[in-house]
Amino acid sequence: MAVADRIDGMADAEPEVFLKAPHFSTKGIGAFIRFLDNREGASVIDGALEDAGLPRDYVMAEDLWVSSEWQLRFQRALAGRLYQLAELPEHDHPFWQLWREGGQSSLSREAVGPLFDVVRTLGSPGLAYRQMPTLMSLYNRTAQLSTESISSSTHRITLSHVDATQSIDAALYWNLLGTLERLPMIWGLPDAQIDVEESPFDPKQGSQRLVLKVRHTNPESIRWGLRMMGTLVGGVLGALAATMAHQVLVTVLGACLGSLAVLWFMEIRWRARAELELAEEGRQLESLIAAQDGRYQELWEEERKLRRSLLASQKLSGYLPADLVDEILENPEMETTLGGRRTDARCCSPTSWASRLARSAGHRKTWWTS
Image (cartoon, one colour):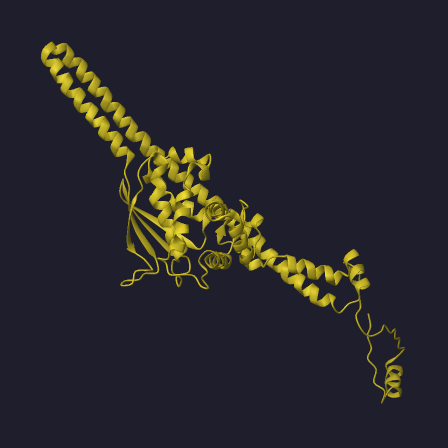
């Protein structure tokens, strides 16, 4: 096989580099593909992946990225195969509920794996909601998220596009909505209540960003309510016992209540310290993520340059004999001269050189020297 033919085959087999731009992590894409496999069937999803332009092995990897262009191609392919749509539908079409259900399923024990119990150690959904900006940066580099804690059980989540001229699309809208409302399930709590304050899809006051108010049941409130009730019951019983047994039981009761107050205060301090440590770990994680993403960006740029070089080599190789291309591949450092001929000229003096030029008048030659 000629080398030019081999280069043609390599270029055709290599997926487009712009489909691999670091926009969406395959950690999240892979989990969503598994959900779609179970929901719609692997054969349907395989067809959509083929239409989108990247193989299943690539999008199911744990440490790669896909671009916004690939995401758009996949959405269009899936909409065509499931609903026979030529274009993406409006945001309230049933098609987008797949992204909402996918966000919900991503928080199940099966999908999260060993990290499920790690997240539970945060103690409450409130801490998890405050860590959402870090979690977002792990999976999505096209949007930025911020959180505001209104109370221990109420938070405001703001999502905006990194490009200020772009709006949040329907897929991200529904996926984030499903994730936020199902998050309390990790602690065995009911779904959170979501109020949409700003949205790109509001017909009256459309906004490029998405602002959600999240209200959830706080397990800490339940536990402290039980403790307060227990304390109250204990106080009443202690007062009755003190009335009956005079000073001795009053002293014992006071000691018990004092011990309870100390334990209560120690637990509050421990939780405050745990939140500070968690915030510091989140900042360190963000730094590591930024460094990793920078390295991926460098590798992606190098891959794009290599592809351009490959395409240039492909075009140039068409003008060369196959045996010469093989020799160059075997010894890339060999010196080559293309066109003309090698001529050695030696002149003894300027006068001799002028006479040579005079004799060659009317007969122009091209001299190639090397």
